[in-house]
Image (cartoon, rainbow, N blue to C red):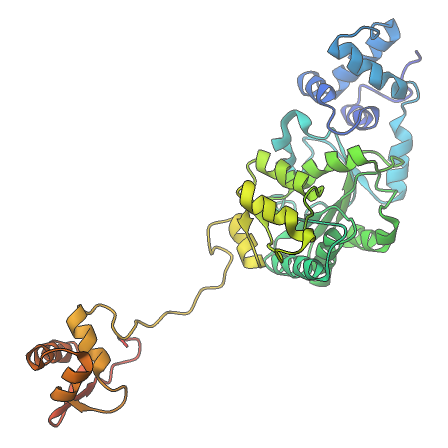
Length: 388
């Protein structure tokens, strides 16, 4: 085997090479790079292949055997040239703009990210993101809810992360863009292959104002396994994950499962009980301790203390009978709202003895809740903010 045609001792190039050499989420590669670092791990693999030592049945030999075919023609300089032409940039762990929440994935953390645009509106915003995901075959109801959630989230300064797919993903992205907010699309293929093609204009808009990101280099096609693997990135980037619509076996449920495994809150939007498009959401609510959410304010409560993102509520005036014992409450309640009444009438209305009514009226008068009107009684004229 020939030597690698690029500087494999460069940590950035080595990290980029690992993102091309193995499939996303490869556990053996993740363990190897986590323990040796990208440079030494790549050197070890090259040495094993050169010596022909990856021909056995042991797990590490099987791992190297599946990486070897790509090693023969590996040259990440080509992919980096494509990324540069697209105006993108490479991020590796440790970079100032590396999204730290991805580190929670441990050995399943991506080796590098191929990015067009920015993953956060500001460098200190990495944790202010919520993942909004759901069905591709979304209903009008689901798309409307997803757009409204995204609009409310970005209005609160929280970015929206999704997968750029048809249906709920696209509605969430459009909702964020329409409110001039920040949104990030995580792709299963390279950032030069905007997929699905029908969303290419949307994804270009996201790249221009937000971020489009992949863990595989340009030129890589999306595949089912890569879609499933990228869901862990969506879940990790979001401080919480919200599923708007999902069928019983929807891929969005895998994003929710990844979020739960990372101890991220999971929200689910309920739908009609007759709608198969919401069956997965109802399953999350019933079986997996997801939180029922119906608007952006409830989603925001998932990522912060209850009510922390909500406007201050107006002061609530005390109720008419607040703080009264049962007898006094019945007497005050029996008085007309705007007129006066003699004691006998109040006693009949309250269903109490006259003596009890007189005693209660005496205490209420001391508190300013009632006042005399000749031989009758009426509710007192209280200052604003007093008991009602």
